[in-house]
Length: 166
Image 1 (cartoon, rainbow, N blue to C red):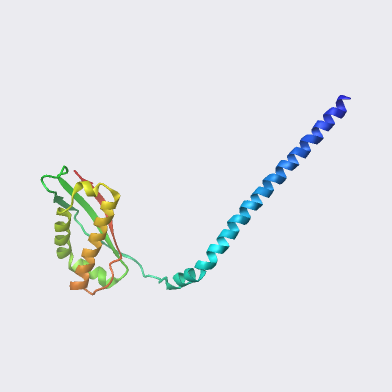
Image 2 (cartoon, rainbow, N blue to C red):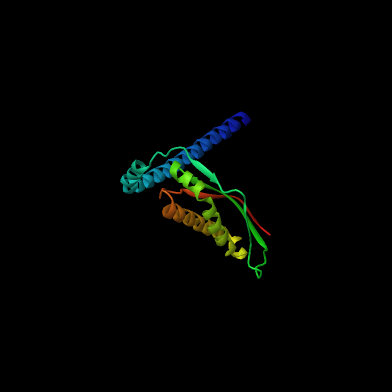
C-alpha cells in the first residue's frame, strides 16, 4: 500500500514539474516574441537611416596626437576658493598638415589657452559638465587658430591628460 502511495506521489511530482516547465517555456516564448516584434517595428522605421549613416562613415588615416607640453599652470581669481589650475593636454587630428600647423603655432595656442584657463571658476570646473564645456571651448579656440593661421583642416578632439585644481 505504501508503494502505491509513493508511486502516486512521485507521478504527481513528475506532472507538476512538467507543468512548471511548460509554463516557463511559454513565458519565455511570449517575452521573446514581444521583444522581437518590438525590434521589427522599430527597425523598419530606422533601417534606411541606419544604412545611410553606415555609408557616410569615412575611414580615417592614422591619428596624430600633438602634446602641448609643458603643462598649463594658471592662477585663478584671488576670490576663488582654489588658488591655481594645472592642465596637461593632447590634441588629436587625422590630418598631417594640421599636426604641423599645431606645432608651428604652438606659442599662439598656448597663449590663448592660458588666457582661457585663467578666466575659469573652480566651482564650475568641479562638475563634469564644466570640464566638458572647457574641453569644447579649448577645441573651438584651437580650431580657430588653425582656421585663421594654418591650413584650415580639422582638429578632431582635445584630451585633458592631467587636470589639477589646488
